[in-house]
Image (cartoon, rainbow, N blue to C red; front, side, top):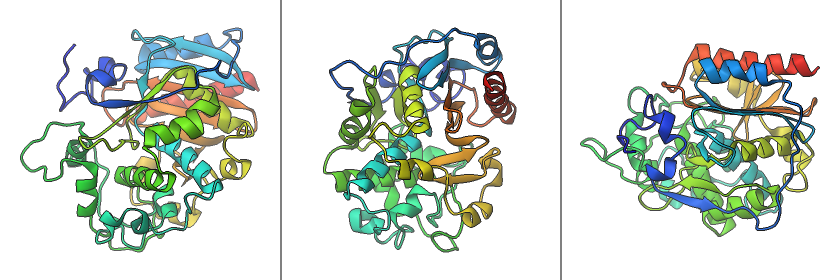
Length: 361
C-alpha cells in the first residue's frame, strides 16, 4: 500500500501506516537478545469486555493489561497481531527517559551537564545554558511551539516524516535544532513541552554512550528486558534517531516495558530512577505554557507524565502505557486516532484505566 508522506500520520492513512512504519519512512532495528525473553504468562481474559469498547469505538489497535508480571488482557484489532510493530509516537520519549536513567547511573551522562557541551552544534541556539535535566523535564526555555495543526510540519521535514517543500529550510534534525531561538523566560522556569528537546537528548545520549541510539537502547534496555521482538526506530535523512516519536514495538514488549517500571526495575533501571518518573519540578509544571496539553496529568519528569495512579507514557493519536506501581498494574493501549489530539478519546482512555483498576481492586 502507498500512503502520502505528508499525511501518513493522520486518518485514514494511519490505520495502516502505524503498523507498517518501515514501509513509509526509514527505520533501523533495535535488536532483542538471542536467548529466550521475559515470559509473561496469560491470565483468564476477564477484562475482555472492557477492551471491546476501545477496539470498537476508540480506534484502538492493541490493548493489554498486565498485573504482577502476568497478562490479564491481550486484545488486537485493525489487523494487528502479537508480532506487529506499532508506532508509539511520544511513548518513545519515555523509552529514552529510561535509557538516560541507565546511562546516568553508569556515570556516562550527567543530568546536570550543559547540553551544548555534548552537542556543540546548539551552543548558539536557544539551548545555550540548558542542561540534560532541562531536556528530560521539558523545562528548556526555547522558542518552539508543539502545535501539530500549524507549523509542526517544518520539524517533520527535518525528521524525514514529511516531504521537502518550499519554506522548509532544515532537512535534518541537526540542521533544525540550531535554528531554535530562546524563549522569554529562564531554563527550568516553566514546563514547555517540545519534541526537539527529546531528539536533542537522544543525540546527547549517543555522544555520551559512544554508540548509535538504536544500539544503546538495545544494549541497555531491549536485550536485558527480555523483549520478545526486535523493535524499530525511525531515522532522519542523516541517520539520526527520531526518538521523540519514531519508536515502534509490539504490544507485548510495550507491556514488558511498563512491567519493568511497575516492578523494581529487574536490575536494569534503578529504583531511584523509577521513583523519579513523572516527578519534575511541580512549580515549573504549574506554570506550563500549554495547559490543554497536560490532559489531567499533575507532573512531568524524566520524559514521563504523572497521571492518576502513577507514571504514564503518552503519545498523540492514542498511545499509552499507564503504570500503577502500588498495584503492580500496567495498561497499554496502541491506537490510530484520526487526529493527534482528541479530548473525548483521551477521556475514554482514562475511564478504561480507572475501570481496570476498579475491576482488579
